[in-house]
Image 1 (tube, helix red, strand yellow):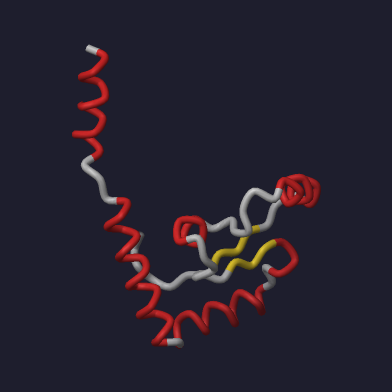
Image 2: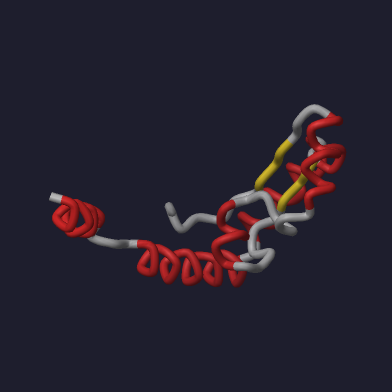
Length: 98
């Protein structure tokens, strides 16, 4: 929630990846993409997570001014949606049980 451009790279053991991929839960693994229900941040998974691909995706994220501003706005909006008075909410729930 730092409202900065990013690239997600993820590698895991081949068999584990095949098992998880087969579940088909979500098309994304990165929390920003999951929360926004869109591919806003590049995800490089398994064989795609090469140094060259990471470099290219990172440079694009850092040099594309329009994309940086779009991400900052999307992340700021998501931050406000997620920001909750957690202590008050927890106290209200516990109050019902006490």
